[in-house]
Length: 235
Image (cartoon, rainbow, N blue to C red; front, side):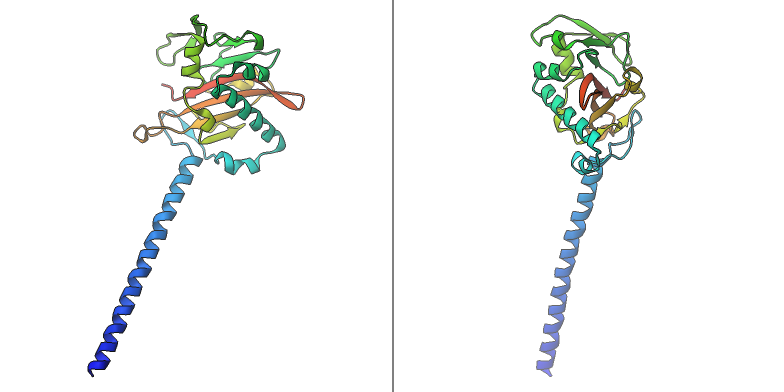
């Protein structure tokens, strides 16, 4: 009788231990799946905000295979230009600039034909030149944007590491605020690539999003850059 009781007890303990091991494995897999899903959704969709309407957008790696040959060519051109901006290489930037239209710098997505500054490829300002230029008006205050080329570049061109942006969108805005992008109105047959950060501080719920939009026009089988456009949450 005692032997039967010992065997029963041993069997019960074995089942109990097996059940605990199974529970730990399930918890581990459940913990990993939501984490992966959350990470994917954050990189694919900019966070919504009162100043930004966002639509799902695949990450660059995921979307490359879905690009048409023309879109892939545009994406490649944009990556080359972004590399030049990251490296502050104005010679490379000039080589991509359209010879006739020049290169427009717009502090906001709504391009302004009256106030935006446009430079020909052979007449780019120098980072060493501290001459103050007027680049348009600040959103909200309406005060003129008076900055040297270097200061404008640091504030309205490469103020984030856009070459490493988590969202890259070809021909379609990843997000838009209350400042409407109108590049197609100024440049017929143009297209663009947007490098987008959905936000940096979770507490701001996406109101600190930023983008850099590179606008191109077709030039034979290639593309030429016509505008560098900064985007951010506006009032």
